[in-house]
Image (cartoon, rainbow over all chains, first blue to last red; front, side, top):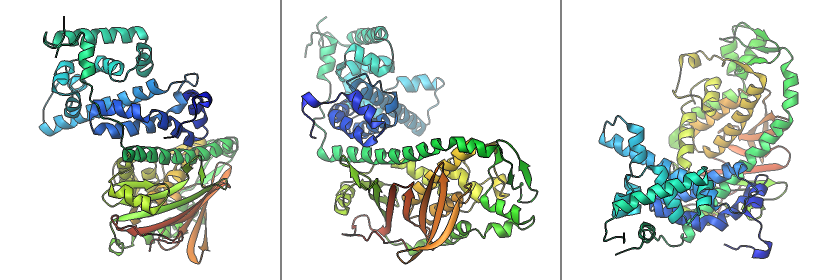
Length: 189
Length: 341
């Protein structure tokens, strides 16, 4: 996709502000960030991530009025939307699977929220799914936004709408859990 | 393999999907642009509605006449209360008690809906409906590469394909199975509307507004109006019914049940008017509604209810061409004045 020269390139905030009046302008946000959003979604959900990545931009277009126009980088906001869609999709998949299996689970919401569904597990790979599977979703999301989404702690905070301190805490706990779940053959202790 | 930290271990396990394919990118971009064009259309309408809000409140202070439960006992409401009555029932009340049922079927919209509902499904060939939308907004068909309108293909199996530029492009999109996302939700909404084809105008209105879960209710069977509502809420709902019904008429142009329900829903709008006319020699019903301060108009084929043209305010006109097709073998070209028969 063609992009304007850097010297004349508007910030994401200015373009999104313009798109409030002219939705077609939002295509510029798509052109800039589609590859990164696509990569993140496909990394986490396999082939199904392509649809989720596309849906991310549709949701972003619908909710563009909420974007802080003073920010120049829309990536954290977009990956935050993508993460919510991934979570919703995984939850739906888990519920569907459970319904098919006719399982009765008393603590339904907690179980569904914690469970890695088949698609997510396949995307993560068997070993990562095993290592991350028991992490609460908010910890897993923070860790994967940081490591796979390549966001800083501040950007993860922006994406997940929590304080930076909370992000530090979540990622610290996630790393601690992951460290204990891995064997000495996998990392140096 | 040994790693220094758990983060290194996790980084190495990140799948590498590579760059998105051009087809995937084009599909996502087209979907976004189509959604943006839809939002633009709604935004313009809402803006015009907002401009008229003051006038609406002033109207609310006047006494209005509405029909009773069965089109009999006329009640007078004052100030800001107003029942949502099918317009036909209002006509009946004005004409005299006891004839509501017979007169209700005399409005051109209700009669057209009945005609459309009786259209035999077997007369429709193909397995999909092709809708060509040619929109001129402020005299332009596209702005900054974003085309207004485009080529829609709705398959009977519920898939929706879109291409902005040409039938050939649409055929490529269909062949690659690059369906537009979110079409499932629209298909479900169309299903709800279609289920109201046999219901009263009030029932069809509720379906268009997405406020029904069952195909019929006792109240609907009595052709009852809805509960009294505040005037500005009713005007807001009228605007939504107009927007969603005209939109569904285009999306569901290939389905007589959808068209019938939408046309009935239009009949419930306060102040809607219809005029028999012709568009390029085709008998048409010109349906007009003041959405706020802006009068909007849609021309429907007088025999089939298929949309022919729509004027959104004074600066946007969309011309439709609707045909039943085989999704795998789209026509090379289509006349903008082709209509579903």
